[in-house]
Length: 292
Image 1 (tube, one colour):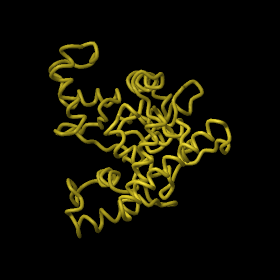
Image 2 (cartoon, rainbow, N blue to C red; image 1 turned 60 degrees about the vertical axis):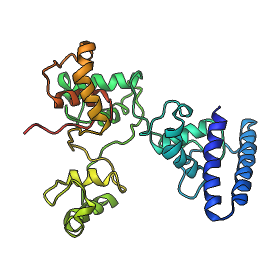
Image 3 (cartoon, helix red, strand yellow; image 1 turned 90 degrees about the vertical axis):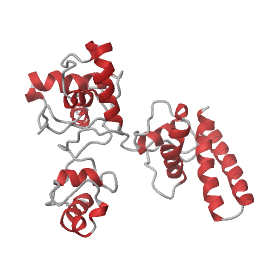
Image 4 (cartoon, rainbow, N blue to C red; image 1 turned 45 degrees about the vertical axis):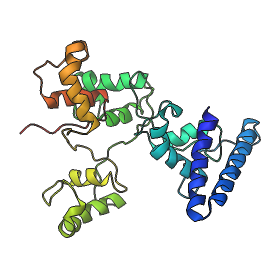
């Protein structure tokens, strides 16, 4: 099944490229050629005749890169059952690793594979304990962290411990700063704050000249090469997955399963429920902003 899945994604990419160049006959021929080529490579690899396993994160222009992009943008939406353990929010490396694990095509094991712990995994339990209990009773164990630190920040801290099973998390937040080794993101944020917002305010929906550096970085993280900003708050709004999760928890969840929300009551605020979901790593909830 997995071979068919990966083949489908590779053929889709090849066919799309061929069709954009000319005739439908050429498109069909190239698609068939790609299928045969991928089957040959898969057979060689299954017999152990391929290259030795070396990690390599695919880059634009490579066959594997286009297969991963298709899987991320189309495959997971059309056939989520093909990608066990992955979601729309899974990283490029996680998708590449999934294709690589099938032994198909040119996709190798990606370097620096990240994985944000999911519910049911031992690391998830360790992170939740650290966020809810550990930081309160043993703050000296968590240098550089606070009760408002993100799930990913706690997981990244735990991965350096010999007593933890946690891997490097994906989407680890980082607030970029100036000084030595100025990053591309810092330059983009600086330009957006000083010039972009003045010259093209329509480019920055939801921002103003008074918005903070974290707010600009958070916005650019969805558009350009910026990491997620730390210490950025956002109270979920209608239409967002987090909003749906919070409203369900407030209206149905706490009534049906109060044991899931030990620190909350039916009178708790929207922000309290959102914080609870944030700490549990549910519905991609960010830290809510304080009520003014």
